[in-house]
Length: 374
Figure 1 (cartoon, rainbow, N blue to C red):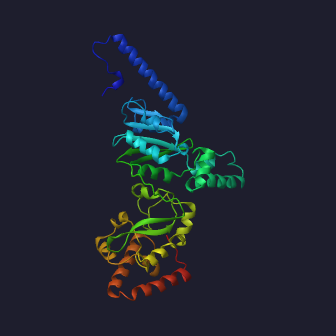
Figure 2: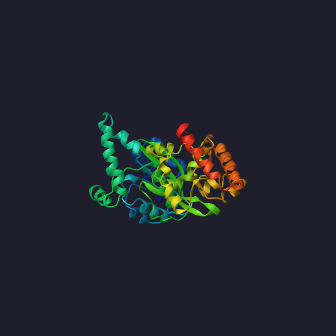
Figure 3: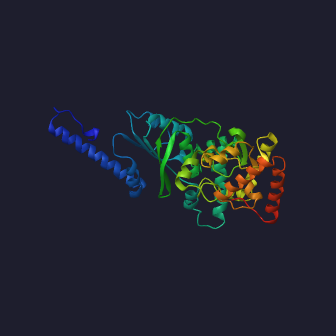
């Protein structure tokens, strides 16, 4: 199909057609040159694998102000923003406005600097000890302050919302919460480019948790959705990327998503020693969980387990201490599911004594056999 920029009326003189074509070709070449100079040849080819950057239906901008996108005349089927997400003050608001400019299945490409890339490019990056101290200070001010009430005002007053430290998981999660589906991501010259498609309207989630304690939606007895408390081990907005991570890497032997980039470094330590699950004692006091029982799992994971086990699970409350710990089994998917099946079948036969037996077995294995979480 011909480019709409080249369509002219039949009665228009031939020399005007030629001039028009030359002008459009010059504009396209100029845009290509600018993109290559700013982003590099590889990034330019990456963009054009998904969209035609020089097409009049593609909007190429470098802006942190959503009005520069909304005020663009006419419709577009793709938007490429070369300004870093790190410099956008109201990130979700910006993404929501982009969503309103596009139709479903239209592309949106963004770029940002990850925490790791920021640390590597810093001028103090080659100085031992000092580089780590400096990065910690930056992390506190540019990562934590924007998320803490009161300190947020100080951060925006000083920086005007620029140079925020962002993780890959947070940027991608924000995009998904704002109605986009992640198609691909790639890093070029210190920046990560994310290609996504609009698939629905934004969720407008005003209650995202940034703090160390947060609530996960899990399936309880009879399929009731309960809020399970936990210390944060993942980046904010990570919950929106469950399907994306599973599609990308599948499950690990532990039954958890494989190569999960949503986990924080300290989160891995907390998980290994079950420290992240201590707040679940609040759920025990509320009556949502027991001390011993099958793990509280998400609706998404529930769909992947055998039907007979689904039916057994729904009969009882989930628990803090899982059966595979009490039975000293491996933490791969099959071993965990088999341990749960044995526990649930025994629970049906001995409803009053099973939990007590499993509790003391689990404590023994944790203390004397050094049983650890996956």
